[in-house]
Amino acid sequence: MSDISTVEPASVRRDAAGAAGVSPKAAGLTEFALAIGGFAIGTGEFAIMGLLPEVATGLGVSTPEAGHVISAYALGVVVGAPLIAVAAAKMAKRQLLLILMVVFALGNLASTLAPSYASFLVFRFLSGLPHGAYFGVAALVAASMAAPNRRTQAVGRIMLGLTIATLVGTPLATWLGQLAGWRSLFASVGAIAALTVLLVAIFVPQDKVRDGAGALRELGALRRSQVWLTLGMAAVGFGGMFAVFSYVASTAVEVAGLTEGSVPFIMAAFGAGMVLGNIAGSWLADRSLLGTIGGMMAFNVVVLAVFALFAASPAVLFACVFLIGCGVAVGPALQTRLMDVAGDAQTLAAALMHSGFNIANALGAWLGGAAIAAGYGYASTGWVGVVLGLGGLAIFAWSLSAERARPASSVLREADACA
Image (cartoon, rainbow, N blue to C red; front, side, top):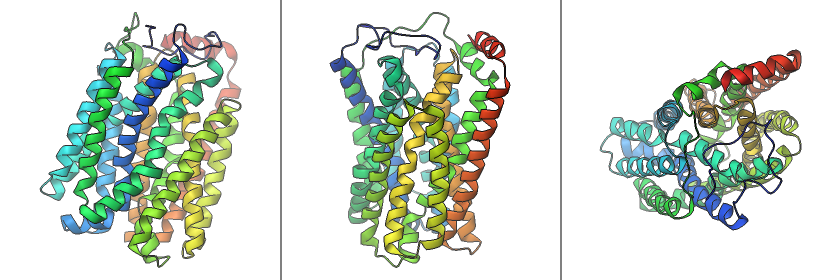
């Protein structure tokens, strides 16, 4: 079996057939196993957003307070991704994936049994710890088995599990939670995570740790300015999506006048947008990486503004939720961009991308909740998203300007320093 422990920097060319010795069938089964894990994580992360009113009632808190459990999970991702990536730098990727998914399964099962709001916050934080490292390592494994001009599509297929979760898993979990209680959501997520452990054990090939791997090499990623700027695009620019989607169930009922029974359909619209955006964005990014990032971030700002202005219309609400989901097209592109600028510090960089996304999750949910609590109404989350989206575009422009201003020799010296 081939060594899939690392992904080469963008400057290293490989055969167009992809990683040597890896058959398309083997790569496909590996991607399938890893995508099921993404499906479990996506269902657990997003379905709770459609059940916030039920969670609030069950735990005896307000809906904005219930939104803090989303932030607690996101904080777990932010903290866990870099710590795990550095601590496990000398661990084989297959072994690490298995451990991460076991921890995720146990965290969700504990969430099912949480006796209080405080304990539920703690269990959601613990459940978030493996999230970023899992997606980061899974993306590296998938990209290492793909041809250079198809890396983003390989990463996108791993993330497809997460986006399909929003289309299928999240609406079903929302419906199940409304029928059987919100705790049933986390029991089902724990079961899917347990299935992932089995699939990874069967289909993900054994790998070797690369010579020289270690915490210091991984920490070298933090010396590169473009790593920080790419993370900033994710942390700020993606916040708008979470500002809106965290409170979309209440927006549908309180602003658009829809019934609670319509919420699963709204979640499905968001999921359909995410699936389409993930597929299209991965394809576009393999043709124009920076063009996809900038174009989709601008697209998101426009859609969020329309949402803020016309959320009272059920038809516009559905359309905007779908289009906000399409905005996830920038995700695989940002993941690949980070892998390109990280040099040999691949594991930490890949995991940090999901820290960035979940800083966006925490920031968006917090700022959206603050706007609602201040009396601006649920539709005001769209304006919060516009501000965050413009911030992401500003960081993107900064990144381009800094990259164009640097001579090629300095870029090479920085890459050598991180090797």
